[in-house]
Length: 431
Ligand code: ADP
Image 1 (cartoon, helix red, strand yellow):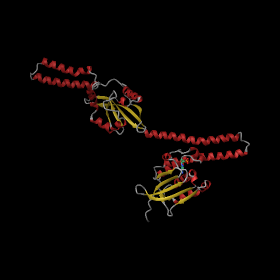
Image 2 (image 1 turned 30 degrees about the vertical axis):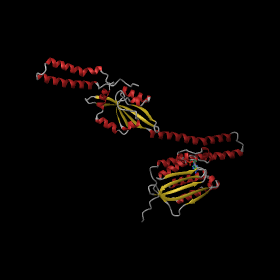
Image 3 (image 1 turned 120 degrees about the horizontal axis):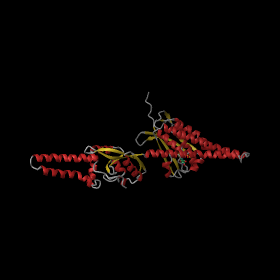
């Protein structure tokens, strides 16, 4: 689609200067020849007229945009070394276009982003989007910057903000060529964060609205049809209590998650022995284990195991892992909590805390997504267990803040093992 009037060879002041130089040089040369007596003044005047015609007539007769030679001429002024160097050195994809939208110069990032963009070819043929073509046309017509979105679908969706800025580029003859500088700015990370934020708000409100709807439904029933029914009242109050607990837990988890996120960049530095924390959590979960008829086996070393950590966060992490094992792996009848010190991939010693159950396990396709917020293998099952879908996300954030890593292994029908690895703290220097 054509964008604007065809490009001209040079701007008018350029042309005048160009012709003036030719005429001046020709005039001087002829004057020298006439003075030396080699040529009669009449003949010299005729020669000068021919040269003047040759210098001026092509402007009118020739459509500069159509021949490749002229295209090269259009390109030459803007292709000065300085312009080339600036375009090539720009960190984002950048393309310099002439007033028709023809590519004068482009950098490596632009070639990688849109391989269809080629020198001397119209950019609008390469970037076929109507939005981009419209923006380019407007930028040329108004000489004002315009923005458009460029979507790069391969290999994964990438959103680019494309900014078209009119720029004045000096030409070889001291004139000015109006060009368009087109730059691409990657907006994908921002867009993803925005999508995550929107998903998060939608999920959190949905999770809160469900128990709230149940509560208000039971309140209506208790005020109306079940007003005088003492038995129904007891039953409904118990359900309402469970729903209220679920809301409280969800809010707790959300707050914990945002607290850990806020301090993600600060590594905890309190040296603490992790063994008493594990024992404290296991003792606290004993009633749940009894209720689910599961035994919790602790396989812990005798000597203290010291890491740099945040006690409250470690309590939360261990509680989430053991509680999940009791909730989802209860059919295995046993949960083993073990702790070992081993060498990490880079050879540094790390503490590995593993919570293993022998329940139904988790299908491999779910494993990579388990630590996403609100991700659950079976939403109904999780809700029935009082889950919020935030537990493993919180675990992952806590592990990250402690500069550790979380490993999840599972063989369906044989159980699951969650291992939190933490760097072993340096022993304090001897007194
Ligand atoms: P929830 O609050 O639902 O328990 P989590 O983030 O702690 O949320 O866990 C996410 C999902 O991972 C759970 O809903 C469950 O489907 C699955 N899951 C977690 N731990 C286990 C386990 N030990 N065995 C089987 N599935 C598990």
